[in-house]
Structures are given as C-alpha cells and as structure tokens.
Amino acid sequence: MAGNTQKRAKDSWVYKVTKTSFALDLEEGIFTWKDPKKIALSLKASAENSQRRKAKTPFQSAMSMLNFYINRAGKKLDPSKKAILEQAKVELRKVFGRTKLQNL
Image (cartoon, rainbow, N blue to C red; front, side):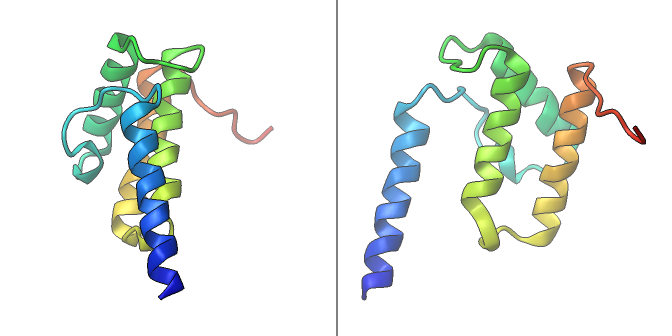
C-alpha cells in the first residue's frame, strides 16, 4: 500500500515538473520515436525556439531534457528504447557540432 502512495507522489512530481517548470515545449511523443537523429533534430529545434529555456545554451537545454526523461523512466525504460535515446544523445552532440573527445 505504501508503495502505491509513493508511486503516485512520484508521478505527480514528474507531472508537475514537466508541466510547470522551464521545460522545453516538445513535439508530442518525441521520446517514443524510433529514429535517434529525428529525436535530436526535434530537441534542437525546440531548444533553439523555446522561450521557456532555463539552461544557458540550447544544447544544454536539449541534453538536459533528454537526460531528464531517461532518468525519470529508470528501470522501467525498455532496453531497446534506452539504446535509441542514448544514441539520440550522440546525434544531439553531432547536430550541435559538439563531439566528445575520445582517446585522450
């Protein structure tokens, strides 16, 4: 019984954060898409066009929103869906012209 109460509270918190914070205005169902590049391009467009951006740069806002979704889904996120979203991070870096330094 206590688990159900905690789950409802957690759901309410996520709902409140995504609806009332300085979250980006995202396309409907963006995190259900199967194309990582399409997800990245949509996040980029949302971050560049949003007036509700809290982070300093559009890149930070877009990456933050993607990480927020992945973290909130946690263990309930299907592994194949998580792989798509992790690839979307790579694509997001590419579309913003930012790449991780490899083999330092």
